[in-house]
Image (cartoon, rainbow, N blue to C red; front, top):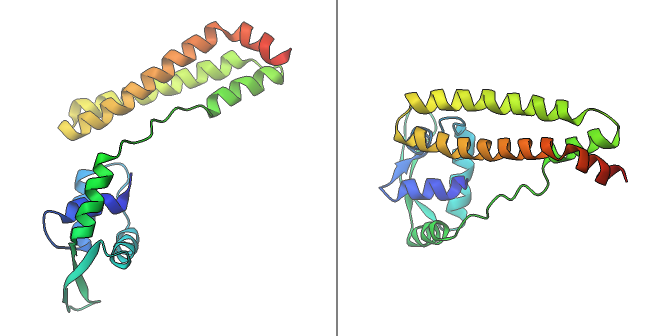
Length: 174
């Protein structure tokens, strides 16, 4: 996820302080990984340097000055371009799990144990996500669905690999 673009998009609704941007980000996108304040302010400094935001006002307080940021026309254009650019699909062609299976076969270990252990871990994760989905709001349900679909695909790969383990062993040890 592009934190800079996400913060820019949040600024389109109106000028905000860094503190308010962090809260909005965490509320909408940061359920599992909330932003650190330092990350917000370093990102805002970079956006300011690139002309994508501007300081809309500064308020003095008991602590450091509080800057209120506003998105610029260049920032709006940048968000529009980012939203219109498709994400590169993750093809998983360099899978750590595949590497583990092949290395187990090359070193004469039982690769089926690796597959079984991974299957159990995927199923455990799916149970947690399914429970979270059942209790969550629509946004959380959609996030959980995305993760669950990926885990289901992984499970299909685990089953297929288990079924082809003898052929794979022959291919990699030849």
